[in-house]
Length: 222
Image (tube, rainbow, N blue to C red; front, side, top):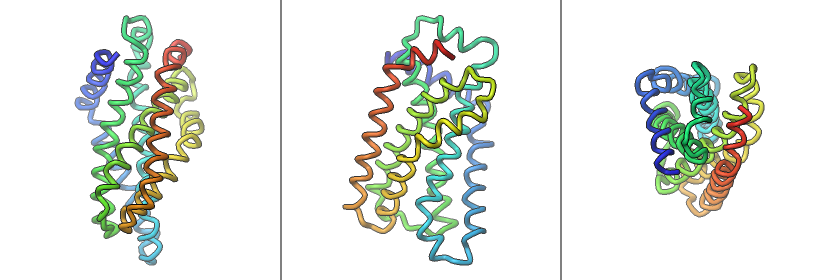
């Protein structure tokens, strides 16, 4: 399973390295979202300071949609998805490989966005010991849920519009918990943030477990 996961993750990351969609399109989109929020809220610095954690994760959430759509759309042409289904690769390995590939892209994006909120919003990431594990746990949850709903919508003709409707409500707990944890980290209230981090870990573990169980069925249906 882990060997197959490494193969799938390597394939997707090589495709991304060649196409540079995340670097040339997704990252500028996410930074543009931060800039637009800065223009909208800059007259009231107090509101902008308070909203920084939420704006950060909204930008990540919107970028997740683009990364998931990209991760599955590249396999729609030339029967690649059928080849995956007919190959001897473990479906659980395919799922984990997708999670790793999407997760790596999101982590790079989050690092850029964190620099963005420091520069644009003058945020002080003092609680870095909380912010880093929050990013890791939230990213695993986003990538796992995105991989599940990505393959679920992959076979639909309206996948570009149905994916946000399916995925965004599911990711609401990640948005809430990650925002609260980041708020505690920025305000140096570490104790309040750990329980939100625990919720993110539970969410990520639940979707990893669910994906290992049902990804084979979803791949067949797609």
